[in-house]
Length: 488
Image 1 (spheres, rainbow, N blue to C red):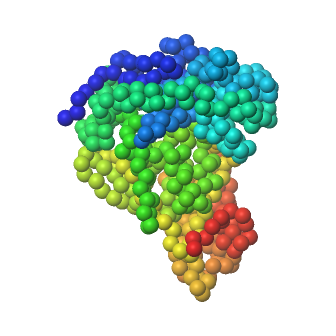
Image 2 (image 1 turned 90 degrees about the vertical axis):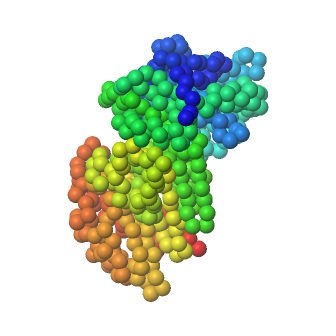
Image 3 (image 1 turned 45 degrees about the horizontal axis):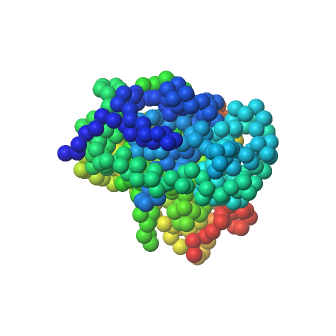
């Protein structure tokens, strides 16, 4: 039986915070501005898109302390237990003057109206700490989640390229204090469960993975919140009540990644950013898609398990994972079971998940030799946008030029992420030629009856899906740049 505490503890800049009375839906941004009067973080969109509220959140990973840029508007205060929150007010130079990142933005005229500037500063601060001399692509990637209405970004990028000439991270306050901060954070995570509130305002912060399983089995009506990139919008945009809530983002057991020569296993709490190195190493065809998931702040918060468990028909990981033949591992108390990922999605808003059961991990089989694989995301904006549709294609063509295996899956084309089984049947065993592709296109209408919404019309979705199959074929024939590598 674990011990129970009634206090959420974290560090805010240079101060230790202890909260015994907080609601599950209080966002970090509101708390900073209204309770702490730290108003450098701004509310622009309240949905994690514009980056004006960006702060850094430090967490212990092994023996290191890692600072991630996150959007405070959709991050809940109760999820901060055992972390270090750093706001723009904490930045300073070695002699108490402007921080190198701030001074670079001043000198290179990176701020006009100034509303978005603190968010840019914090995103660049996080980048500067881990990569003092970043490349232009690294800068652009770090700023995907920051929007500016004035500058056109060029002055900001020039400032980012020059910021290390103003000082090195070794002279920064976070660098100098990281050992002390790491020890403080470890002390805050004292192995006790945290419980605050009652009924609809109840907050659970499990002591460990087994404790989480026990809590959820006993309280299956509770909401599981890890990165809050989806649930945060339920609060800020739809004013929905979300309690009682079990916060799981701190559980290191859910941040494991296991690899062997046949598969990769990602546990549910692994964020997109944490997963990127292993995805790039084992599935390089997914790298471009991965870097188009929202912005850097959301990739630092959103989790693999959350993207699967919420069952969204436009989640971007299920289509490629289904095409790869992923297996899903579910847990209810001490009982575990394994199912095919494609079988998890039953209907809109309905998944094969029993009361008190949660997604513990997902296993991705490595591509066998000779198979070709690609995923394509169609959205109105290239960066930081939700898919209109997302298609994943996998094929093996045998020595005589016939399709020996094919798997195709789509998001945004049905009420759930779904395989195109009629299209697969039209291709299987046939010659891998454009004539075969053309003949299979009519089968899309058997698999999918897409809807028209703000992102695309049903006609556009169906035509785009057909054209993506053509594109995939052409790329397998060397007539495109997208297929980066065939498994040798």
